[in-house]
Amino acid sequence: MVPIVQAEVVAIIPTLSRSRNLDRCIGALLSESDDQDLRILVVGNGGDTGSHPSLDERVTYVSVGVNLGWAGGLRFGRQRIDAQFIWAIQDDMTILPGCLRGLVSVLKSDVGLGAVRPAIVDDRGRLARRSCGGYVDDRGTVMRGWPMRGRRLHGLRVPTDLSYIASSGMLIRAGAWDDVGGWDGRYYPVQYADVDFCARLSANGWRFSIVPGALARHAGSASSPSNLRNLLSFHNRRRFSEVWLGGSAPANWLDQAPAIHPDVSKEMLAELLALSNAALFDLDSWLATQHVIRPFSQRIRGAYWTARAFADPTL
Image (cartoon, rainbow, N blue to C red; front, side, top):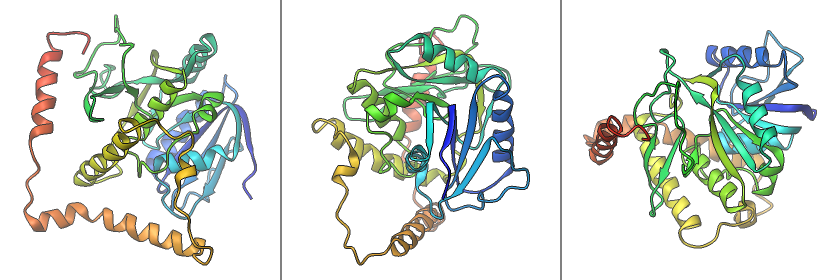
């Protein structure tokens, strides 16, 4: 039985396995706890994170045994914490000094903000391209990210009309999280989960924002093969469109979960989920045998907006 993790801020890290990235991520987070009431909950989505040689009393590990995905891991963690603020952390992030203090300060100063996230910077200290969030068109497609090219932080103008902010490093007011029903685990394993969550915040009167003074680094998109990401983005975009463009969003997505016969055991479901996840990850290998050429439409659209970004500083 995992004890309830209590602190003003609890960071939840869903992860597939223990790695150097995870160790670095935890180390950077622990340095933030020197002047903030911070605890860490690592949710092992089928990995070996249940044990750790350098166990710290500020870190709690729980092994789920099956990959719940990003949103599913966050939901699982939420049931086991008691916090004013919840910090969604990806295991390949590096939090830079003072990041948490800046995020907490902004949330405490504006009660209408449901969530904020740090600025993701590259090795040169510039705001990383397409790292903060983006805009969704009337078909539910993410038409462009922001910023469309690397930006200096000095004099940065953060847009107030973003459709969503990216989930990595997002600090969320616990009251806002619960008010909107939490994260939707059907956006599996991660694509469009943040788009949906921010749509839920907006629909319930909460705002979200980027905090340029809070900084982090993020390797990004390293856990899924390229064609798998494209497939899941297509699949999850359709789900997002059905929910948000075909009517009002459900108050709680679990209310619409299919009924499962009582004779179907948890072990059977876990095995099927693990097998399905493994099959999905073979997609790139399979496509290599089919000589499938990926369409260029996304690249053309991205090149167009990147070119425009050199003339327009708001992009």
